Image 1 (cartoon, protein in one colour):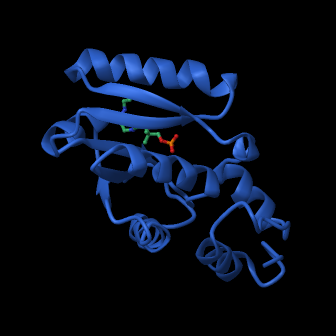
Image 2: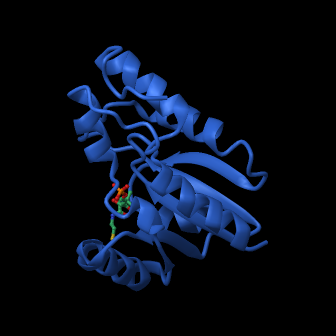
Length: 164
Ligand code: PNS
């Protein structure tokens, strides 16, 4: 079985992430979306909630599994028999960080990284920006799935994340 992993923080998942997962889903037999559990970094949504949202928004894809992981991605990949990481590249600003992670992961266990060029429609999009805009009542509809909009409203109040 050809399997890949799409790792990330997904706090929260955006349409940029979803685009990468959907494309990976068309290329591999199974896609494992791996949500990083980072004890030292408290997110807006806890890991269980991020996973619940991810399950919801990938339901239409029959070959996507949502899991969480702690520690090194290479260990998670080895334990789950996954040889390839798929990461989206939004712009050159992503490149240095992504390249060094890919090189380190390859050095550690031979884990490969394939990059997907993000849909230009989402090249400026990040979870951090979504949270910042939503926290100040800005409209992030069209950038995150509806279920995320609803959860942002719950967090920041009915004025936030407007639209839809
Ligand atoms: O969504 P993000 O925050 O850009 O995802 C980053 C992620 C989770 C892919 C990266 O931080 C990661 O793999 N963390 C796990 C710890 C690890 O393996 N670190 C060494 C990377 S070379």
